[in-house]
Length: 400
Image (tube, rainbow, N blue to C red; front, side, top):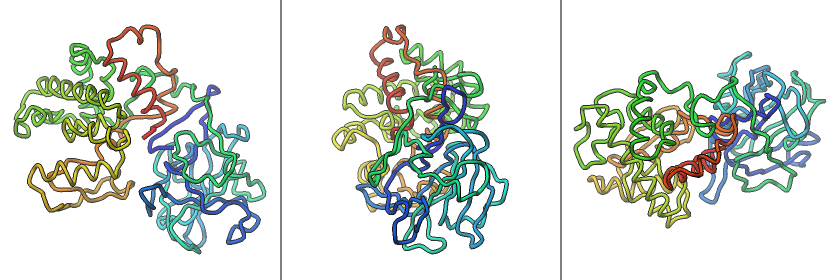
């Protein structure tokens, strides 16, 4: 799963999701090294780019703390309600071990599905940074009710690097309503409650401008983008001045800012289509300027942190005078969770696309009212169809 991801079945119950963006199993149930007869599985965050220590993992469902390890090396969470899982429907308990921050948790502490739950770590008896996870049925910490991890978690939208050959499954049932409605995003892309009232006050103006420029489906992502850029404050809330070659904050009128922001985003969409890249490249290009889509198109077609970081260092920063890779601290909830707390001077924000995710909702909430595809959608102009394609195929489930 991805940060912020939610998933609800047609029965109105949450689908329990595997808590990491990447699956790399290092030890399975009953392995001789340390698991004995337990049904535990160990995971690291490892891809072709290498291993990430202190990698984030997220709440598989809404849950609360019911137990903390006596050695301060782990936390046990119980689902707040019955959930859907590969083995059935009911309450689940999630035991997550080795987070170095475990002592900071308290009994009764809560998390919503997709919220940051912890980080892989080295607390306790370990040989390296990882997550140790066990799952039990019921609402109590009862090891006699252990089930295998693949029997308790769906792996929707997790990048599988090494699954150890276990029979993991996904679920296609993510059609349940959340809070009974689908107020934004046509069921594909929604703002979450982190978006403030100031940004939301521009919704009508954004809708009018997007319709005028022929991209009405872009209203919600552009409001999220405004939240990242300015929180809705100032005369240039879309930070559009630089996209026109002007100095920062040259624009003093929010309506003009929205006009040029929509224009710049549409240009980014058009080049994204030209180079056949993902929606996150479109967002990242809004920050970097036109040219990034071509770079991503030549490097696999998908925006990633290593690629965005390299472009920041090698292209954006040098173009604005930072030719020696000077970095400065960049600390916020997202950068800490991703383990990237430095940025390049004059290099833009290589975590920009992830910031859009922070203010939007994926998977179950995106699908909450269906996939938004109707006959009417098919009759819209080619750019608007492309937005729909990107949002439904790649935002849905955070296929980053």
